[in-house]
Image (tube, rainbow, N blue to C red):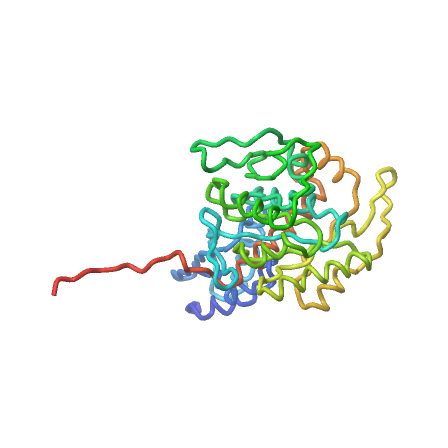
Length: 363
């Protein structure tokens, strides 16, 4: 029987593509250890993103590939997850208790950005991560309604506030601090200072990811986030409609100018699904998000349908990922969320909070 060498196993693992980011396991540095004992091979994979619902599929891909190698009769695969902090804008450091901040922008209102943000955050939580949402829309906060939350947040020290939690998701919004019908008639500097206070004065509990739901446009709040808040990556949400794509392009350009990596584009309302007959119709056109991704050489994370149940679930305070966790829409949100986290895992790591060991020697 042929003796199996580590290089043989490694060459096989180079052919196994992780479906969440599109790179092979060796290139993605996911292979942490391998052991060969005769005809038995064991492999330990370490993923930098949560993937509870696809671990078994990835295991099966590895086992199937290795069993094709002559001389291997038994394969075992273990997968662990280690979510690290990733690089942020130059001159900034990651926020304490938050490993990664992901900004969600649209450029244009009415494209379903907040609904997408909430469901993606819930999807990553379902995949095994600790996740939070910061509602950065000071003038029109919608996260409290979508999460079914209300009332003022608590404080244990009269200096910081505790995030309000629903469905395992930590959240903060100006909507918790003002009356629902109160108009926020604030100039830009006050709004941007409020955003920074909401981020820094909230006692976030060891988050892997904090999604920041940005208001539409590229104004003061967006620029403050891009220049003063440590962001690891951004997502652009658009519809296939040309008008939405034009504004989304501006949002993408803003992140590029401040060196925040755009992790990908999500096309929302890509196809209307009739609730009566199930007929699919591209009301806002088709292919716009994919074309924008290709033009800008960024990832197309996926397309979401224009489905009445998604709107109804958000309005009722129980978003689709928790209202119908096994449905097709929830499956799409989880797929997009995994791709987002997987793309982020491939970016530069941040080691600014790690200090070297210092040894003092008597001389």
